[in-house]
Image: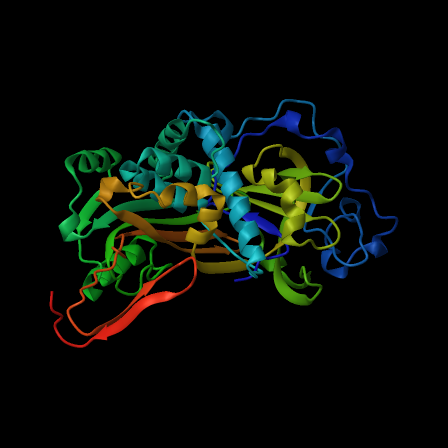
Length: 451
């Protein structure tokens, strides 16, 4: 995996956000300055208006907004801004944005140059897991998933509502499903079974150590993601007591299409200073939704179903390392973007990744709850969380975007590591004085001792 020099947050993460005009500083509208001459522009962008670009010595920003202030007339609210949302949606949005950034940042520190993850997949799977967790584990789940409220129960209720709402009114653009597999000897107690039924979660009994059981699970993932993700487990799980599974698939077309005839090979400057050619798509000048400051520029690209959008953020001049994007991490929520005239040049891209995210989630606060002996007592006494596997892909082209993710949270019975010693064979012994270090008596017994 590699972390790219630009930031992206895909349709796997957040739906389109409301426009919040008061969050944009007035200087945002004047951040781009006219070049002194058209010659300052790179040749690949010559087909666009020179007045729309701010020249640099090394690279050109992909996203360009005109230097005119926004219209004073009220903008038409987007469907995302006016649609009725379940209670707690704002808290879920904030938590997902925080989780997305923290995962991107951590993966970059682990040496990845590009990455893609699904905070939505994690949130949905953990909303199910929480039904069998104790209070301490529920609090740790809420913290690890980015919630900052002091009421974990309220956060998890909001998360459950978000999970239910994910597929509502999304049409054919998004399909998502989840299920839980429990080992035959660990049938869920009646109260947990009732909670899972209320959530609409399918649960079945399978021996996860059997290759055929794993094959059935992977086939379910493949079918749910329409072949985008062929498997999530891949091999039998030794001593696993359960697996919570979530899978989603998104395929959407842009509201404003890129013209394939204008796609051209263009240099891309990486964060490490190297260059490579990319297939650069071009979106004609029009009314688009941007956000800028003196260093960064972002665009929010809606799909034909405007409930979904792709937010892309990059620097306007020099390429940036992941850590430098920290100052605009909140832009990933879509807040503060405004409609302006401008155009866009953005590369086609495809990313895929596979990770065990448990170490990252432990660092985010999950460890505080999961090591409790009763953390997942709802799934059986002594059950512990052992792995959080995720695979995610996203492919963006002139037509739109395809994305998929599969998440598997695996639990197992804690191993009894107590020792059982039986002295029924020859042995040696020593009677020791700990203070002086002297051994008072020592010996060897090679046959049944008398008594």
